[in-house]
Length: 292
Image (cartoon, rainbow, N blue to C red; front, side, top):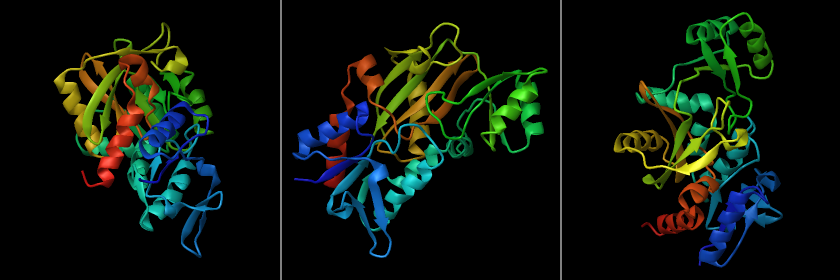
């Protein structure tokens, strides 16, 4: 029987669900808080509570923290080191790092010719202000965030410069994206092992600019067009993750991709589609380990 540990947040809903699913299919349950992992570089080993992590057949990275932050890249580097020492990890840390940073993810999507909302990235506040004036209304986005946390909507006009200055006091790199007109929803298209799995719609509450559940939005079932599925498939294929979500918004000018997720949760699919994803992910990983 395979010995597999989940890297996640103890008490976190998706992390606990995945640990339960691993236990159901392997007979052992181990949920590791990444804050408790230590590397001994002299010995070339990684430990958790004194246990040699290289004694596991594989690790599954579900979460590496509660809220996104720049030090997530440092946390991933711990596991990248272990991967280079021969430990099998799903998804590979080097691949997760490419989507964790919003700019890095957007750059890869842009290089592949995929449609993004009009976006400017700069360290120069004058250039960022010019972008806001051109867009009319823009969103300032932190490079490390999820569920719209830390994002600020700024409208062109006399207050824009002050809003920009406040944002840059906390975020040196300015990621400025045009606020799109859309039908009050965006889509989350999910892929397992590169294969399309399911979609939900995030429908926003009244009088909010974003659709996240944190802002009163809700998950609803949705069947996307084949065009949208194909677009999302192209986006996720750039990164090679074992389980991920592609956020797509439909507008009068066509669909745009917001991002590809590094650590997608399970709850939305369960609420909208009654789909229990954790066992499917574990089955996929076990097949991958057997070369299937």
